[in-house]
Image (cartoon, rainbow over all chains, first blue to last red; front, top):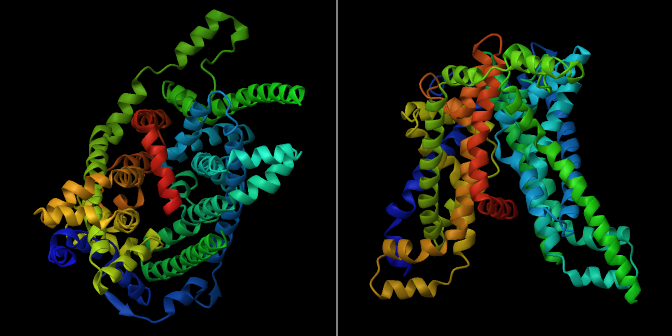
Amino acid sequence: MEKSIKKYFPIFALPTFLAFIIGFIVPFAYGIFLSFCKFTTVTDWQWVGFKNYTRIFYVNGQLDTTFLHSIWYTCLFTAVTVMVINVIAFAIALLLTKGIKGTNLFRTVFFLPNLIGGIVLSYVWLMIFNAILQKYDMTIVTTQWTAFWGLVAVVCWQQIGYMMIIYIAGLQTISPDLIEAAKIDGANSFQMLSKITLPLMMPTITICTFLTLTNGFKLFDQNLALTGGNPGKMSQLLALNIYDTMYGTTGWQGVGQAKAVIFFIMVALIAVLQNKMTTSKEVEN
Amino acid sequence: MAKNTEVSQARKAKHGWIITVFMAVLSLAWVSPIFIVILNSFKKKAFIFRYPFGISTEPLSKGWDKFIGGAKRMAAGSLNYSNAVKKTDFFHSFGYSMFITVVSVLLIVVCCSMCAWYVVRVKNLVTKGLYLLFLFSMIVPFQMVMFTLSKFANMLHLSNPIGIVVVYLGFGAGLSVFMFTGFVKGISVEIEEAAMIDGCNPLQTFFLIVFPILKPTTITVAILQAMWIWNDYLLPSLVLNINKYKTIPIAIQYLKQSHGQVDWGAMMAVLVLAILPIVIFYTFCQKYIIEGVLAGAVKG
């Protein structure tokens, strides 16, 4: 059978393969190449070696902290959102698996913001934040911290429903017999949560943690629409910082591309770590 | 013992009631931003930031007539909506978004399922390498390829709603092929062999036998890709010829950037217009959306 299918490569695999070459392979390989070049378009380039990479941190012999600030700001943002989203989503999931009335309706409502795109969502919240903050003579971009908490709120609102759905599915796989047995043995609710539910939920928690982690790292739309990186460039997360470097000023495309390579390595490291953790968990079970 | 269970059941019921009320309040708060936007979309723009959460300029304590008068002064009727439609050219944007999403999703589902089946059934170095490349592409953030991708798309004349579909197929192939291969590996070869012996060629075998079996994964992939493409801002804003073609997210972003002072009345209206189709779609396909998201999250 394999032989007769093999001849059909042009029909089955070639269209996707060609699009994949155009949409991924060539841009990726060429992107790495261009990070070592000075360029304005893809045809007009000049090899400069690692100069773009040093220019990320040193401009005319002076330390430029914009990118470092952006890394630090992104890490902090990601840490806060990972914690807030997972704790609240887990709590809501616990409450919604107790078989109360209206469970389906509540689930539907909590999940809704996830379907609305980052741009639309951010303008909804921009209006609300600015309406509230104007009473204190402030806007969302008055300081980098108003921008920070604004972003956290928007991202939590968007992703809690998503993670809640995954947690609910995980909680439903826990056998009721275990809970029943624990109850008969006289365990209280806190003991049941910490000794039975949480350990059994660890695989799900790992999945959700990494999902929120990569989402936080790659966040762009909400950052662009809600704060635009203001004030100054102080609320730029990594993705927006790269975009701004590449399209904000001419002559900096190479530096932007070099930043993108660093960004890619960071995201790839998270993915490798995730892969290691999930597979080692599977072996244990 | 019997008494004990009665007590615990009574306690459970009482707790259930409290949780329901708590959840009801929380979910109302959860959707309140959307209702505030709907409310504000019917106010004159001068009043949106002065009275963001009220419906009248006068408090109710000043008497009913004054309250109604204040509400009338504030109301804008459908003015914001006609402004929004004019300024963003909303119906064209909606058309472009719809066209790009539907065609891309159809193309991704058909091409990637075919490719996945081929990759699983034909085992050689080419398919193995291709599969690894698909896997690898899933961890690459878009910023890594955005400059080169948009420039190449320009050079290949893909900067239009038809061309961008190819870009979406290419950049979305990783996840889709990965999910389809996961499913195809679980299908037994015997059915396909039987079909081939009965005289089906590989194309017939795929579309008559395999593709129907793939239905659950097809729905998952379609939902995930549709959510991504419909809401995507950065890729189309870089690839498309922006002066001619704006999808809904691009149109909204431009409404803010291009008119000096933001017209918040029109902004509120266009947000409502953008959210409405999503809510309608969600109401009808809720089951599939939630299942799709779940399958996608656990595998991705």
